[in-house]
Length: 181
Image (cartoon, rainbow, N blue to C red; front, top):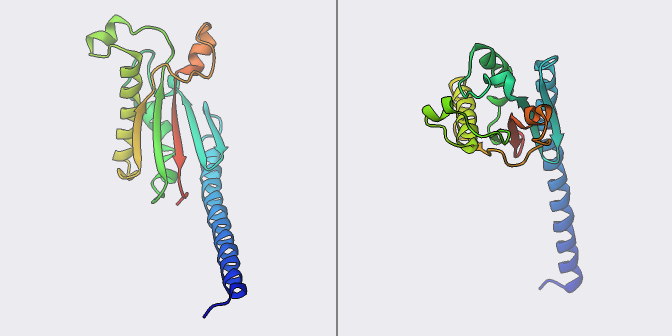
């Protein structure tokens, strides 16, 4: 028969053990994402890429003009070279989700894109995100971990009332979320 005092001691011990273990996992996750942050910072020195380490995730933002011609969605050789720099880091992950999000400005779709079947900014951002994911998959990133999302003109980071603001809103974000390994 377990006494109340012994029961309390066991429960407190279990809670302390669980919190210590949770702290270790969080520190390990932080270390893995920090390692990825350092590797990506080294790979992209001088490029127009912004890398931020956030709470439990790492976000790489690439301006659209680096990857796509104005109003386009196909990756050229220069864009592939920019994306290839992140492949060694991304392909090393086994449990980290990789989400590629495409964003646009609020300018309506032009006639050339409409002739190609792109009728909205959401369509354009989806095609861009899909093309980035397709390229990363061909280079060895795990299909089980990566996904694409077109966001269209939602979540602007600047005003769409100026050319500079619209340029900031046209972007691809590659976000790493998860255990970091």
